Image 1: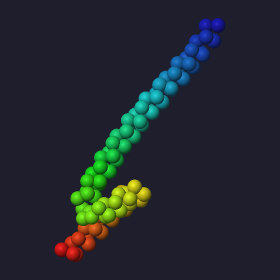
Image 2: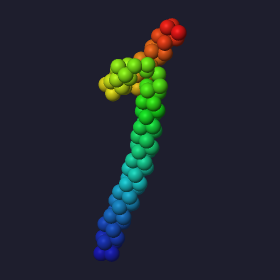
Image 3: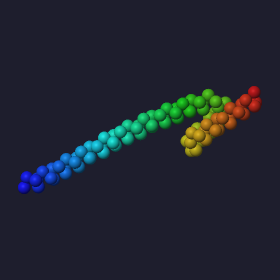
Image 4: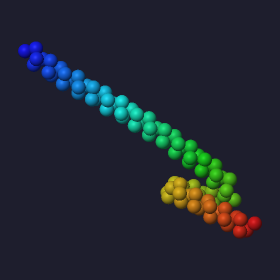
Length: 91
């Protein structure tokens, strides 16, 4: 009878240990995602600052922000590069 009681207890302990390990893994993943999000927010803030510096007119700033929001960072950077190239041609 003692063996019958010990067996379920061990099973519960291993299930508990497994659950705790999974919780730790989830906490680690959450921490990684939070760090990635912080990096993303910083890069977006930096890009917004660059937009304000590069765009000669308010209309171009709005267009750059619209591209950033709807098409993403890569397209926004492409648009800003095209503005810089056009500014160099004019100068």
